[in-house]
Amino acid sequence: MKQSIPNLFRIIIGALFIGSAIAKTLAFHIVIMEILYYQLIPEALAVPGAVALLAAEFALGAFLLIGYKVKVMTWATIGLLALFLLVKVSAVARGIEACPACFGTLLVLPLEIVIGLNLLMSMMLVYVLIYTDYEAKSSFSWAAVRRNLSWR
Image (cartoon, rainbow, N blue to C red; front, side, top):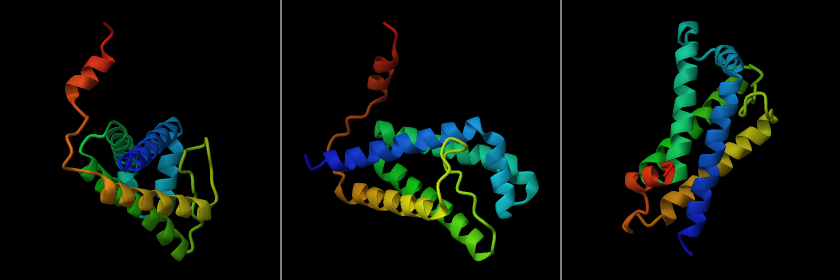
């Protein structure tokens, strides 16, 4: 029972990250425009930056969801959430109206809610770090994934 809450948090955040990456991929041009709008990287790096961001977001979500290298993926996800938060706060501090398109065009939230969600997810991930039993045998195996995905 003690492991069920960290696992639930991990699965929820993994699913949110996958959903966000898919939604942003469907509105890829908006992601590029948002990156350009924040003026944090050169214009030539906007497309590769958007691709890297979406790939990282999807991969972290998938790895959290399946429970692969939980400690490493949790720290990496906290880092990505910190980056998102830093970008939003930096934009506000520089007088740029932040565009909170976290889920592409599917769901546009007010900036305060986006910051709150980032902080909430970060706290959930800290809980995962603290209360995950890393000494216990992991239930994850590539053989099980292959077996579950086979059509036989």
